[in-house]
Amino acid sequence: MSTTPTRITHLVGGAPWQGRSERTSPVFDPATGERTGELDLASAALVDEVVTSARSAWESSWQRASLTQRTQVLFRFRELLNERKEDIAALITAEHGKVLSDALGEVTRGLEVAEFACGIPHLLKGGFSENVSTKVDVYSIRQSLGVVAVISPFNFPAMVPLWFVPIAIACGNAVVIKPSEKDPSAVNAVAALWKEAGLPDGVLNVVHGDKEAVDALLTHPDVKAVSFVGSTPIARYVYETGTAHGKRVQALGGAKNHMLVLPDADLDLAADAAINAGFGSAGERCMAISALLAVEPVADELVSKITDRMGKLVTGDGRRGCDMGPLVTAQHRDKVASYLDAGVEAGATLVVDGREGDVDADGEGYFLRPTLFDHVSRDMSIYQDEIFGPVLSVVRVQSYDEGLELINDNPYGNGTAIFTNDGGAARRFQNEVEVGMVGINVPIPVPMAYYSFGGWKNSLFGDSHAHGMEGVNFFTRGKVVTSRWLDPSHGGIELGFPRNT
Image (tube, rainbow, N blue to C red; front, side):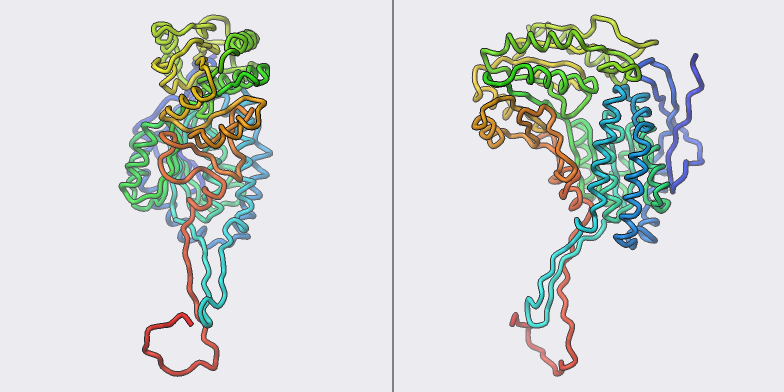
């Protein structure tokens, strides 16, 4: 039985927004096709009000809060997020579609960044040099920026905001976050935990919206930095627009991730990895493996092993214990499905057609089962484009060198993996491949929170990666102080130029 869609609105100053929006956007359950929510979309005027409020909260309280006060809030938030992670995961599955175990894993990876941010007193320590000149000391400090914006994608509605927000808040900033319109509820729920943890009202705000809200954040004079994750065309736009308006920007874009399988690899391990990395979260991951480079003569055997494993996967409602859920919208499902025809027309072999077979779900969900292509060449759209769905392409290559050349020629450089039992080949690969994150017998090499996440080439615009020390540096700016405190014996006048003595 259908129900009235729930109103989903902005969180401003620690409370739900009380106004009425002139524009709204529907929110759907991808597993059933049911319209479950109605999302308020912010105007540029509302964004201006929220940013002004956030700046006031930063100026009046949070930038002056001691490291002890900040860490107390962070530790409480960490505990609350850990306690409520199953609830957050359920919201993700209901609006994104990924299976519950995957959603829970997403929240857990975000939790790791919150744990990293709890160490902010150590991370913000500066340097000190005593007596660099007579009775002159020099020391460095890092200070918050002010109001920062986070613009996050649909595919990780909790984890990506958690890449940025805990570190930004730990560093003393106020945050305005604009989540995806497709699955907005997880961010609202996480923001409520910050308030419960004791974060002062106005330090964290959630503004829902579309391009109007994004442009308002990118051009607002009081927004000092922008963190973005999304497709490469939008990442480029965010970077160029934000920097043109004097902002510090980290914009993480799209990917076409390759997995290189050498003839000496454990093919069972490689087949398992291809399934996990290619079809987890229905392939809607910027770290998904979408191109498998099989170095001959292993391609036939590897394709056979992958095909056998695909036949055992259950696609359906993510709340039913299935292996893979739906895609996020009907439009995206149709776009991904169109690549199947394109691949066949280009001459690739469609080994497993994801449009065939049953799904375990009620209603009209946005399903496409896992799909496998073989004999894919580099000139085909299924190889060139970031499909962002459960489509795995096998490209047969004759050598390590040919595989490496394909990876390095690709315009993206987010993640890659090599499967081999040859340590020398693996070490050579990690040094020669032109990709930001590398896995050795690890198919999705997402680093731990104390390292930084980010790619190369068209997968990153800006110089800073997410979380880790690069995240701390992004959300702060350095200041060097040169100090002289004169002792009581000082006296006299000296008009000459100061000398380093």
